[in-house]
Image 1: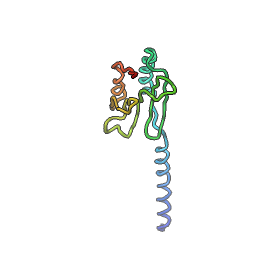
Image 2: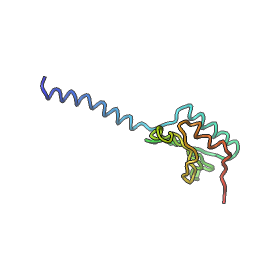
Image 3: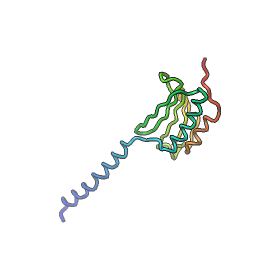
Image 4: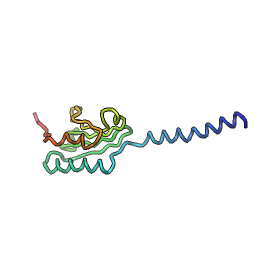
Length: 125
């Protein structure tokens, strides 16, 4: 078999792998059903306590974010972030305050959501 035939066969095998990597990279990070169930339990508890009123879910290329609002027109009070790139380091899940301060971080979502076990309330100045 000629060198050109071998090169074309290797190139043909590499193209699907490159396309698969690009397709995998373009898929956004999402919350699965169990994660959303845990988040929405806390959300419903805080809505019942009249602390939170609205939420937004963003599925980005590198992270998924569940933002909690007091009113729709405001900045989020808290953000629950899933960042798989940090899974082996600090943990994939974190709870971030409106100021950008990370309140709790963990490898499991339940660990990060323990930040809401304390009664966090918005202090108006």
